[in-house]
Amino acid sequence: MIRSRIAGLLVLAALVASFPNLASGQAPGGSQSPKPGRPSADSRTRGAGVLTLVTEPKGAFLSLSGSSGITGRTPIDVPASITGRYKIVVQGAGFSRSQGAIYIPPNGVLPSVASDPRGVSPGLILRGMNYPGVPDITSGHPARGVALAAAGTSALVMAGTSHFTYRRRLDDVGSLALDRAEEAKRFRDAWVVYGAVVLSASAFDYWIRSRIDLKEATPTRLTLDAPTVTRGGAIWRSLFLPGAGQEFANHRARAAAWLGTALVTGAGIVVADNKVQQDATDLKWAKINLGNAAPSQLAQRQLEVDEARRTLQASDDIRRGFATATIALHVLSLLDAMVMPVTPTAAPASKTSSIAPILSPRTAGVAVSVRF
Image (cartoon, rainbow, N blue to C red; front, side, top):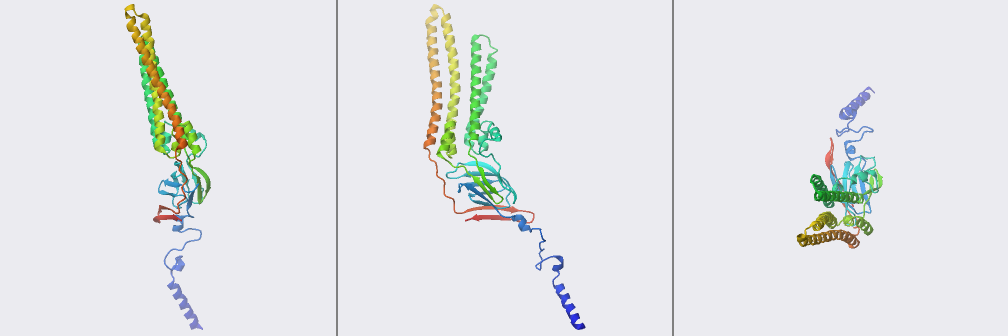
């Protein structure tokens, strides 16, 4: 009996000596066993899963840029390691190219659209009332933005120059000097009006810009309402602003050409109107000189009046031509929006993929997501 007990104790001691890691909480392989309620390093890095980006209608080509980049056709799986604010660009056949922003929070929190939604809001109105062209440039439409910025800057420079000319001519003496001062004042006011029109066009162009909208959001799925091109949407935009419908339908070069030409002819109206005012003043003083002329000077003064009248008529014809050209360009832009090609929505791709880095104090790698 005593020998059997001693033998049993020896066997138990041998077993304890052969598994020293059991008391320390380690697995037999030497790795630390996870404690209850605390996730492992891999689970902390991966999180609960991926966020799927979906658009309605499907098949839009998305581009996300931020701390990392992802591109592909929807639906797109975003790895759980990617969080934060990302710029998003929606484009593709049948989709109106749009730029916005989305916020991808850590797992368990609802993702959201961080850019201006559709519809009118105080923030949208205030952002549109920026320096001409700036709203277009910042929203991903540089061609129209540059045209509006150039027109707005020209109006500002010309208005300032005309104002200084007006102030200088007020110091001159005589009725003719007063008339010239009034010409400079009208020229200044005309440029101010032109600048206000350009500012309004820039703001309106930003207000009607295509925007993504939130359709549905869950912790694992973000559905975006992607803007699609329609004939009606292009027509009503071109009705209010030349080239706006073409920009909506992704004909960007054509849109910039319509808007830029209309801005040039509008500036031509201002310059031609100033020339008409100057020629009208010349005709006025030619008639005054004719009334005060001696008998020997009547023939010469009459020739000056006739010449001034012909010059005024030519200037008025040029002004009328610029006005007619501006109206004609607006009408032609509207007709172009009615007949331009509108690309149908492309079929969704059969596969999308994304690659994103995974960096943490304990893990480094690359996450590859493929959807079939």
